[in-house]
Amino acid sequence: MFAPLLLAAGLAFAQNSGVEVKIGEAAARRFTGAEIAALPQTELVETRSVGAGAKTEQAEVRYRGVLLRDLLDAAGVQKLDRHALRHSGVAARATDSYAVLFSWGELYNGRAGDNVLVITSMNGKPLPPGEGPYALRSLSDTKPGPRHVKWLNRIDFFTVPK
Picture 1 (cartoon, rainbow, N blue to C red):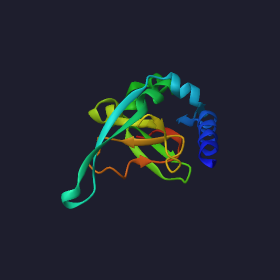
Picture 2: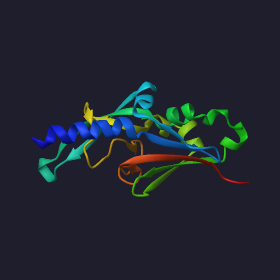
Picture 3: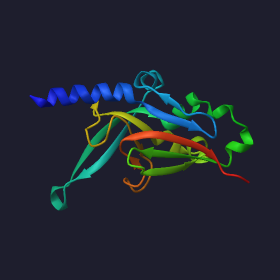
């Protein structure tokens, strides 16, 4: 009986909460759920080993959302000086202050950028309550956990001083 109410409340929160993006010293911009949904959507598939020993099986997880670089472009990153971009980075932050880092070059000049996703759904459904309305994963990392941000709520783009 409570499950439909929790699902509805979670969907409403996701649509209203959005993700804040801050580019350098400029004022932060909050992308609403509708704005995120209007950006180009990407689906990435991750294959996981589930179980142990002889009972290990392969399971596919389908993530859908927006590439991190597409969200950064929508926020105006590409308008910055091209030389400054070369020594810039991104911090993706969770509501509990957990943060992960990416370099501009990693996202825009390498294959990793094709696999860093701001996730809005998993296996065709909204994210589970433990993940939040938005999560971020770097699906090309060799170790799956360290750059997985649950409850993503802020992205900071910064330039390292020379």
